[in-house]
Image (cartoon, rainbow, N blue to C red; front, side, top):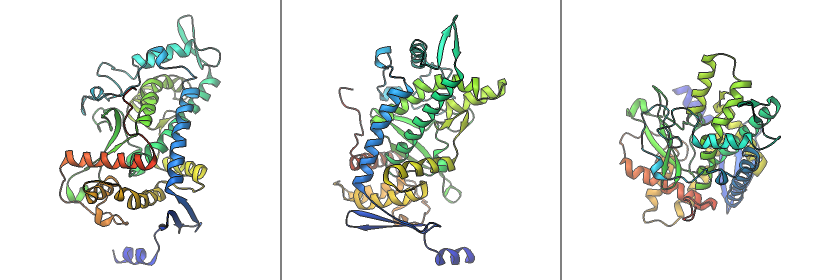
Length: 373
């Protein structure tokens, strides 16, 4: 401990954030030792623009311009979709209890429309069976992978204070057999990522439940990618990417049915998540900001903007914002303390949702669906 303390006191933190009026200065003390500048408005504008681009990309490239409404698929999220079941294997709010396989009534409608789409589609029906074109299928798999990358960056940056990569790679959209429960919940017409944060569990004996509410438009896209597209996307993956064998096929099906972030038959890694985020921010803000730097960046935005939004008790919101990031209010500047006393669970969830809604407001995003959706 003495050696560790001496090292920490003798070295600068890898990232330092400093406000100069409305400009945030980011000092990178790692190998490159570079400084960057940005603003809250630049970040919010980039996020909104990326959400617009993702919607367009999914509609035109992933769905090939096929209107889901025209083929009888409703993408409206309702609270009745979520029974709260956290134990039945394979269940999730995006899959009804009747869907015993990854295929479902909506994915079947999309597959049927895809086979009738024309020569650009990766699949067609020949003699009553599906015939997949390898080149077109690989191209479409890459398109689906790109859409999921864009969706991940928005899942990480739009719901409030983000989690760690080690948590995000394990996010599930259904309950795992003999394993973790699903992390997606439906609340007030949009989706929430409900995770269990384990840091400090050795000392406290408990896991912290953290909820991050997605803006409605992003929740809708996630629903389309997982419920409508994924069962169809898996078919050419099994045919062309997964090694031959029943065990390999079953493992791939299980992976695609449980984990949110998977591609090419394999789960994403924490390093991949950070690299995806770094490239995304480099493109949009000219800052190569991975997950670690972004945690400092988001905290700087939280301290300056979230705490000053009008609320009956701003201090409670500040504490909840730090809690959503997995830390206490007293240690929000860098040290991660241990909470020895559990908070009221329902109040804690409401506070997290409020923080997410305030973050959406800061970014200029709508938290809930319009009344006429």
